Image (cartoon, rainbow, N blue to C red; front, side, top):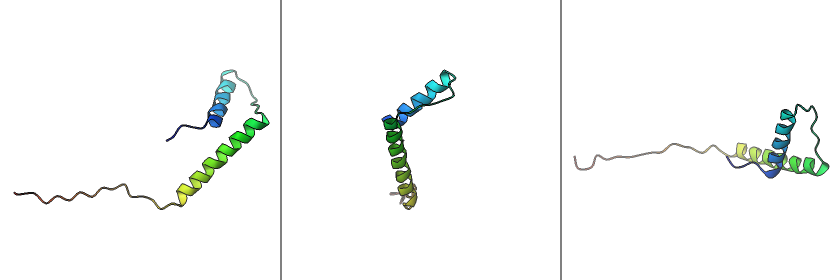
Length: 69
């Protein structure tokens, strides 16, 4: 799994701080909210794209002929 984007990491950091300080509210600026929205939307589109793709097989086929026995 890849690293979360800067916007998601910033949001996660704000949630951690909110929980550590026992605050009940979280405030995002309009720019932060827009950036977070764009990142979440992009992730949702990527998930939708991946779910439409056919499943790839993870199996490996090995054939052995026994050599010169």
